[in-house]
Length: 294
Image 1 (cartoon, helix red, strand yellow):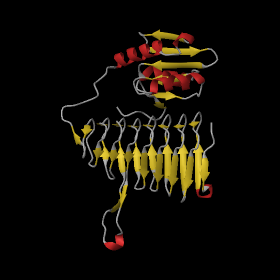
Image 2 (tube, helix red, strand yellow):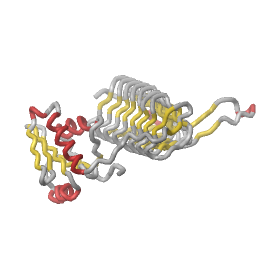
Image 3 (cartoon, one colour):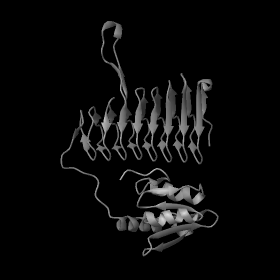
Image 4 (cartoon, rainbow, N blue to C red):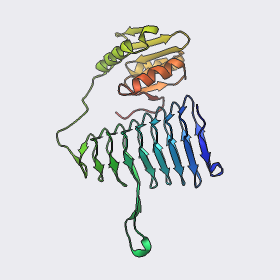
């Protein structure tokens, strides 16, 4: 792991979790008092930069900031688990920004929480710092712009080039300048728990590591387990009852619940490999105690 370059360290604090990946020339610049809290399994690409004027930047488990992403923080930036930002994204927390779990932001997008233009002494009123909030599993496809003071509802998809200046309801599909909802268009369907279990079984059996792993499937009991010599075991339970019994029994290995999307960390090699494989666009599991919105 590369070292993070810190400027103004006397004005800020940084904490970094386990199993993180830090690229080259990652910089955190404190120009005021603040903090950066990076959780576990976080990836920061080359040339990621954070400029901290105040507040706290929090980055949750499994989140990725790709190359040349820039974060500004004054009132605070909260990034949930399994968030993903493409190259050259701007994340502005001047007025305060919250991104819930699973938010995905495509390349060259910009999320703003402030506006400042002409001189106030000359009467310019185009000056404000207003918090924005992006709910869970929102996808900004790419080259999108989000204005300050906007709340984007859960599972909204904003098509490429969308300029979002107004809040929107959950499950919206947005497009245009300014972005407007496209009526009658949805990108999510209801999936039964048994079908989710079948998906997990297929993905694990088709995985790049399948040939070197021992995969056991018990469809009747709703249990999938993957083991690799020297890497540990990871077990997926279809329902929450079996998952809770696993926790109560204190059984070894990483355990995951398909129904609630929760898992218990062990930081074993197999945990990192399997959950990273799934987390792209298959299934994202959240640390025990944090439950994905249903």
